[in-house]
Image (cartoon, rainbow over all chains, first blue to last red; front, side, top):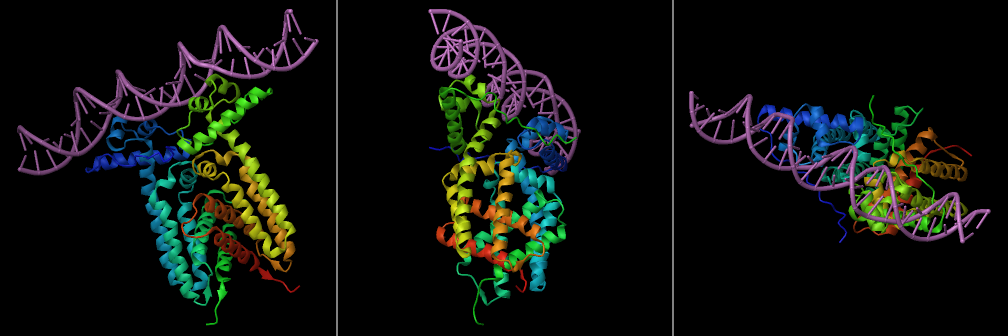
Length: 214
Length: 214
DNA sequence: ATTATATCCGAATAATTACTCGGGTTATGA
DNA sequence: TCATAACCCGAGTAATTATTCGGATATAAT
């Protein structure tokens, strides 16, 4: 009936094996990134990408079947780097005293996204098939589950009436706050203050749970 | 330099004055809405909209210069309805005892969005020029400022070290939580519980501020 | 009733974009 | 060094989509 779920072909056509072909694919992705931030997602065409990358249009089609697969491959490549930094940040945070851990982790996440600010902005606001990319759907959930568990262990007297609902909301709220800081930074409020306040808000939301007599 | 800010022509070409032309424009917007949820934003073309609406393609161009203006007009029309409901909900909430007000308002907002669930989902995830629509950018900020002020009045001993930063974060977090509930509702968690937990989380975040001796 | 104005239309054209295919070049390895 | 495989290419074609324009019809105004 509703043909809404337009299945998109993300697959790569051929894996580059020699160095030159790997370089060619990398050049294509770099060009895609540059075009994304300069002309936006809609205006991108395969021909423009090939031209910007300095390769023939035929070569592009050796490896990518369409524009979507090109952008998807770029997102995959770059979000890997970001995810690794965020996970490293969490591991470091878990070593720290509980009061500092959240603030520290938030800062690491913002830093990781800030390095690719423009790309993040365009990808989040303009790429229409983001929801179909498994990594970006599950990653925040996984991370928040780890963080929530750690927090519960460190505060074993704090209990939530509906922990699943709490995790569900905290996931969307924390993700949104961080992304918002990167793509819509407010005028006149220093970054340090934003991070302090965000950490406090979240901490209070989490620590206000019912306390059992321990 | 970077021609990123692709200016989009949202303007309507001609205001319909007779009834038949108003009906024609309405039919075009209805068709746009139906196509949005069935085939998605990218796949929409002016020709398809005209066909679905049962009007000639020429008539479409009498009133709309392009696909974007069509979708923008639809968003404008429908978000008006939603905004009115949300504002009404807030006015009602402000009459209620402070403990119930937030929970009540959250429910009204979720209800308002839920009535147009599919449209909201597509618009938020697929329409690439959303940020350029002034209403949708400023509305959450305005609303949250009102809510925050009301809360501060009702709790005049609670002070934030950085109120502006708090409002900034709360705006993005509350918006995200509500929209997420509508477009990504979790399995197995009843709506009432989700609303209860969300209200508690936000209330705790806001009430944990430094309390002055009143 | 007549003029003026608003509306409606869709075949035809322009413009854009996707994508192929055959042929040439470079690396590999036996 | 020769065969095979991997790679690169872009002119040309197919397919899609945007948009116009002149003429027909309907409503409003006098």
